[in-house]
Length: 485
View: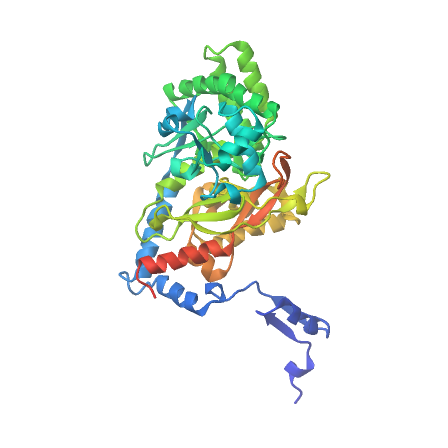
């Protein structure tokens, strides 16, 4: 009797190298390639630590079960958070008194020394020194920075997040956001629009003039409008509500904020005209915001920061509460592991480039804006934004699949963040270090792409993956803290 197996074309399920499929398909067979990697980043010792950190339903007192319970609590805090814009501080040193006592510049990401900073961060640091009047030439500003006459600090350590280089100095205005559910506060600076901006390392007179206009015109106007919202029945501007609505309108509220900016504009305009801000200033402010589709980005970031800080500091939790990049390294913070950064060299974003630029011009991943993905927006909500399909180099289905993939490394779904293209399912929420190391799936981030040289500015937009080394280092720290060998 003939064997069906031997007489029919082979049908293979391949867990190995994709090239193994060639011999099958070349001989008339069919091969299905599974995107699988060995757990523990293919390191047996790490895999054993991972196994000891995983949950055990039969033993609620096991370490893994304690981590599961802590992660559930962290996600409850994430989902219940309500970040509200409640004020605009006209000067950063009015919020952070230490900025009055010494010269401090905040930057994005984990700590980085001057000699290790990327070109855009060098340019932005020089621009901030000129903006503050600490030096009157580029050369003098750079010399001060090289000699250590100005202290560097991280935005995250000041409860703040700022895009790209993240540079924030004493006299710059900042937004104040209150998480009304849990009581914590977060801060961010103002969005500069596109083109040559300080956040991309540009420091020309036009850049500094725009920043002075922010301080003298835009910030006082937005402060008045925000106070009007606070004093009214709303109690401020509900940023999470705007983010949730924008997901239904084609934004993922990281790389695309057109809908969110429009929703904010709709709330801002009537509030502004109800204040005593001069008519000419109102027109200038509304014109600027109307031309700046990414204006809401900083609001999305600070809302995400307020949300994720509420989930930080929970004993046993393996939830990632911050993801940030300084243009050299990418770093994570984990709920139960304090202020430690778990770092690895940053990858280069891949995507679409403006005319005249190419991949070789790109700076490694940069900015605090990956806090959006950490809270479930951005790449985790990419299914909501078909307009960003070109950034991932494929079809709408490809973009949707990124969101589906993120469910494998998160703890839950956020019902407040509905993704229409996933049948209104909630966005993936609560990145679990254990699941990333177990599956080998790295979180995807939608991002702007900066030129590696200071002053050139944004040259494109695309996606990037968070380095696996960050999660491996975090898992090792979890294992050490909780006595796993």
